Image (tube, rainbow, N blue to C red; front, side):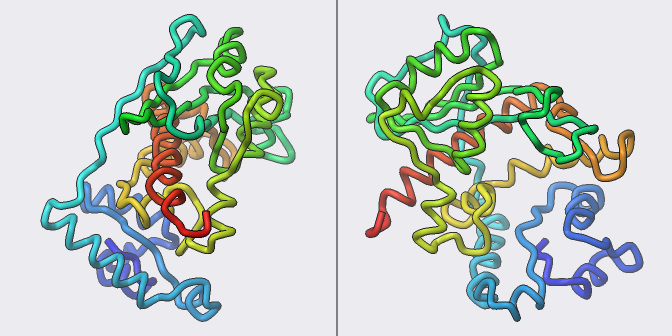
Length: 275
């Protein structure tokens, strides 16, 4: 499905036309099984010149053709779950920075919502990714333990450390497991800010949008949102948390975040003439 607006959705769903893109994605999964929802475009955003609508349509329909022909496949990736610093893998021959991503359970009673500093918030897992000089992408999910900071220190000392919205991820790690990346890393960077400053974000700077646009990444996020939407029905209206997601799904999601951040750095940013 390429969501072109309410009229297009009425054509597909008739009187059951959803009220929002989130609802459209949910209905798309229910009624059309695994039909991909590739994108959403509204006339108001076009009028505000937030993106070139013609170019976006060409890109989307080109991608749709690849899906129909079976030319667009999920990129294979592996990850391992690590619960002890003693078993955590270290780079053999590191190519570039270490990439970090965190998942946090927020607290429903938090008046500021999504505040990782709230006493009831907790770190659920930390994704770590890097690329070896052989071209292999390594993806690890750290389960929070007393040894987490020890492992991250050994892994990151003297190396570059990146994330997508670095200030948040490194702030979480310092607050929840006393790992201060700024004091041990060789340097730090942020793929979000890199794409913003180079003006190559396209229709968004979110990780999923960037990976889809530049690397034809599949949608790895909608399954997580379905679980969170289901959790909202048993909680206060509009509230859900990553803690509501099944552990295995949460780990896979966390690993993919780091994996695609790492790939965006190596396969897109590094090749930009101004990077």
